[in-house]
Amino acid sequence: MKVARILARRQQSWYELESQCREMEQGKRRRLGPLFITRFASRYRAACADLALATTYQLPPNTVHYLHHLVGRAHNQLYRSRSLGPSVLAREILIDVPQRLFHDNALRLAFVLFWGGFLGSMFLAYVSPHYTQQLVGEDELTKTEEMHAKSVGQGAPPFGGAMAGIYISHNTGIGLRCFAYGLLLGVGGLFVTLSNAIFLGAIFGYMATSPHRDNFFQFVTAHGPFELTAIVVASAAGMKLGFSLVDTKGRTRGASLRAAARDAMPTVAAAIVLFALAALIEAFLSPSSAPYWIKCAVAVVSSGLLLCYFVLLGYPRSPSDAV
Amino acid sequence: MASERPLDTCVQIVTPENIAFEYRLAGPFRRLPAFVVDTLLVTTGVVAAAAVLVTALSFLGLAPLGWGLSLVIWFVASWFYGGLFETLWNGQTPGKRLARIRVLTVDGEPIRGWQAVLRNVLRVADAMPVFLYSFGLATTFLNDRFQRLGDLACGTMVVVEDSPPRWAVAQIREPAALELAARLSAALELEPGLSQALSTYVMRRGGFSWSRRAEIARHVAEPLRVRLGLPRETSPDILLCAVYHRAFGMEHATTELTTTAESAA
Image (cartoon, rainbow over all chains, first blue to last red):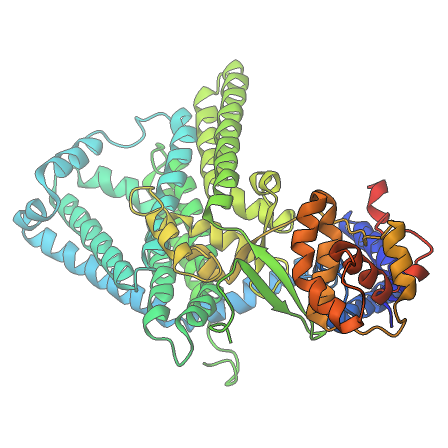
């Protein structure tokens, strides 16, 4: 068939498909009726057929270019991602995510590494101050001592707002950096977890022996559980990505990385939430002059919530859930 | 499959309808202006918000709260600006919209929320060492889809979004060509390569001088002339136009074969 005749025949259908695409792009998708959608779909299929037969029809190059563009545009309208409704989101947060986190091997490894390093370092620092001096450095130690020289409550809460902002950005930035460094084949993640654990443990152990011990523990008790868990979770997510590059389970490295990124998303989100909560508590509750039992209560409640979320909700319900 | 095709910045997407259409990829230097614009927007936005907040709250005597909120806004904006816009605007941020590029998945589908957020969060890995973006640039060049580390992890790519093309089928108006076309057989069949060459030539001949047209047309017109048995004095340009007119059936084109749907846009 001659090209001019083909074009004259198909032209109208292409214009209509184009105007339908424009209407859909302007966001009126939900108000379009089923008839519109049916016509759109059939015109899309016809345009696809035209493109497939473009060389057979011997269409001119600029018409082919136009058809590529038209088909691409209609394709993007037809194949859209599902939107997340609130019920789907709730199910995801309360059921799927804890289960996935519970079975996450990287999280278990990060947990063991962190707490092992932390407790070991704390014990060593408690027993020998020389260890801490060698590890942390004299300046950092004097700085920490001075920070806790005055008892808490003398820094006025009006500064809480500014400090909250600083803590949120600083701590969550550290957490996200832990995650991103984990990409370095997982070794970066291991290194970051261990170094953080040993450093923090040394500080804790040293301050347990210093005369300002009460001030220090008054300060860190309230936000401790959230923050330490957040560090563990963030490094776990990073390590997961890094390990997926090394242990690909038969897939290509790119596909393995993509699959791990998809699986690591809830871990990252959990880390961010935990960091934000820790920063809020650290800014408003910890430096305030509230009595110590309130801070202890907050620590206990937060630990309970964490246990509840990670262990209770995450424990496999039926044998089919266990991975 | 990929090793036989010449190196190009286009990527072919095969859809469930079993057709392959093309997207043109955006390289790092096309993405750079978008990134610069986005960074500028974030910086000015955060500074403006901080100024407004601090002055407004200092009237209430809560200036430190203003600083705290500004820091939170700075943190949220610097980590989540890209993710938020790319989710809501179907793969575009204001900078990308200005540069007319868009983020898509490697299958050509629109980007999903978690992909948008994660690829922007992983920008910190691309920015190493020391914010020089060396890792990101290196990965882009070593990749056949111009993906940086964030794109690789999420399975996304950045494509150029041309404005919708207009097309018009060239029509012949020279009387000499029309008269020659009338003498040609109506059952004239052309090979696909020849037909494409003819349509490209006819589309572009308006930009050349007469002698240049003759020079270009001569290479294809000479074998055609012999094949069709036409006299030696036939002008090559006229011959090609006539063959095009006849083989494409232009005498039946009563209406102007062009796009008019976009003229109202």
